[in-house]
Image (cartoon, rainbow, N blue to C red; front, side, top):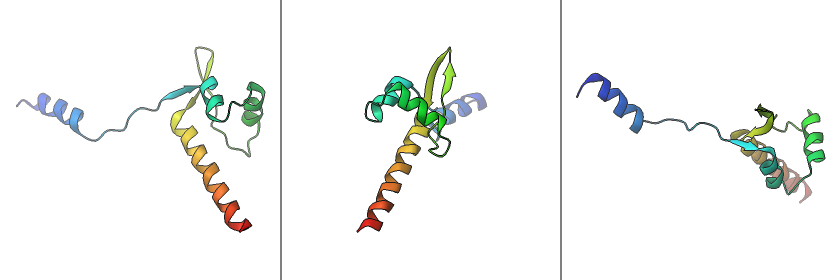
Length: 87
């Protein structure tokens, strides 16, 4: 097998990270319980909340799927900690 063919085969079958998916703001709002556009704007403005920042593509707002999932995990962990203190 030629060197170029080996590299191509290795790249296809080897470990690779998938590119991040961009989520439109309308979908992100649905995922967080159908929040309003205004609520999302407030979350963006609240730096203490640490909500994933928007990514603008052709004038439309998107969010990183990986960042949204990490935010959700953080919310769950905080809820578990609060529940443990309340018991």
